[in-house]
Length: 424
Image (cartoon, rainbow, N blue to C red; front, side):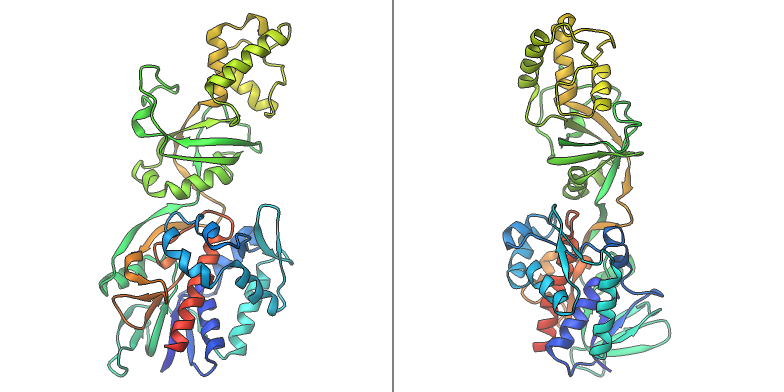
């Protein structure tokens, strides 16, 4: 019999088990992992460097990075935030470093440092780690009041309390649903946009600071790649500004990944066939860009449009956009018509690109969905429906943009649950 069984040998599971042991060293704790190895997602995070957390130290600022869970996590982040995470690892001789974009990694630039730290802590506190132990059934224990019986393939285990930290595991969600919890249907989050649009195809490696809008389905005709003048202008569904990276398969980078997270449900509803509008020069809009190009026409009259360097854009992208606006390779600024100037301004500031599909961002698969947040007490991360059942990490309907925020949700939820488990 155990005092605490943790289902899930990932980030939240290990952190919860360790923090519970620290809070009460007398607890008998076991971690159940379905696979042959533990901490798999930790190992691949950040390209193998492990993006532990983010330098958003103020709770409100931190909470703004969670499309699902923003409101619910504000209180928990006042209890346990990135500063606490940093302290935990540095006290265990795993120093961390803050990079220019705010992401935080171990000084070693190796996820193995984090894994070794966790494994050392489990040994130190006598935590049992059971691999190849997929959970088949969860029910109330007949031997422990309000306790639990956890069934694997070959054995029944009993525990006073249970922490479920299985991430996006459909089988565990099915078990929890059978126990009475509502599961918000999972949809992918944090993915890149696939496009074969001629304006970006073959330009892989280019990165541009841009503003990207996801447009309503009815904003564009399905067979026409340019905005119809007859359509009434409509507000975008979602907007993000930041680096946009052109890849072999389409578009990635922080702005795209943030959009994929915030619009996860809507894009799933669109079956990942939609249109985006890119302003490659976000300091301008269509009107101000048209005015600027008119000034260029007068100032650079004898120069060829395609060979001009009038904006801080990669030259190859500039050439594509000039071609897309219908401007001949040898046309001079002096010969640009009013319609051509406006067309070029439109390509620069309202570049409509069709998206047809998505790709997983690196190996870091994140989903939106999970246990309904209304069914969790965020002061303890205990189920409101089932006493002595706690949930942490991505098993609940919380997800974040890229940058270490999903891990911080895991650390925070696991820590708070561990305190409630140890002191309850």
